[in-house]
Length: 476
Image (cartoon, rainbow, N blue to C red; front, side, top):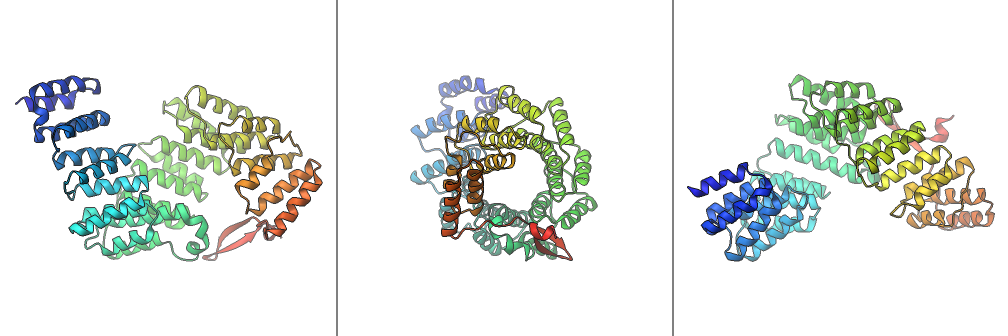
């Protein structure tokens, strides 16, 4: 009877009262009841995972907790901000001689995917094969997602092909794996996937042939593929499918539609979707603001950002990165500086490389070279190549060279020594400052290394295909 009362108390108690309840458990001796402690941990994890872990460790010192208790604590950590703790607990479980079951493995695989622990995930896969659980549909789907998260699209595809039963989760996971791979590696293999149908869209077509109905999660992944490929026509078809089949426009689906339309240049349609959403989160607002800024509607982006503040949303690092970028493209120096100071002082957000980059770009575009140089000198980390190129490009464009005691051009060349454009930029800046010998040496070094400045180009969809246009060709 007392165990039921305690479990009820755990459910309704606040985290600060858990220690008092735990004292009662110790006095009553319930901490030695394996069944009670398993359910107690289940409720405790929902209140405080750190407290639940402390209880679990204490129990482990007295006796080996049942597998259910291990699964509870491993599952909790796999969903937390420190999923690697799940993997450590799994190792302890094995050392105690316990045999994981069909519930344990999915939690560990999820943690491996979140931590990008490909090697550990592969070892767990081997264990699953040995005990014959690879045919379990839930484990198979989790394996697929783990390999997809780790960027191993080939192994994800093998797992998918080996599934005896493929449900909507299986198909959605395979589509998501291809999209994640494009996002991580697509830039380096761009020529491959623009000249061939997107694998993600191909999987979706295969899904339709077996009459498996997609859900909102499937559509979100498909829209991400359309965003990567800038394929607005397929994106529109997916939108129509959702409307015709009465798929609820949840936050994730609405946000994916906004991003797809924005990236494809259909900002009006994106705004329609945004206004039609019954529920929006911070990401929805941020994506819409970013879309407005990227499509040359900076003033509307700032207006929407102000409205977002007024309704009481707690802004994050990404929100400020987006609005700072908008200010940079609009040339609103004062407004950008105001937002930067507001971020640091009012919201207590520590500036990242991206925030500093936005400020350097903002000041550099406005010709405030000394102020931009001060930002770089006071950064708590080394500036990356993007910031250095932005600053040196501003120096070249405005014909102003501050006292470069820290040799920023040299830092740029060291960070990316095989990029020809960096040598050209550094040479131009040296020429501007009167260092003609340095400029000549850079040109010679570039020639000796066989480097060239790749001309800027764009991919243009025309006549059902893609064609490459360089800047020179576009001006003819």
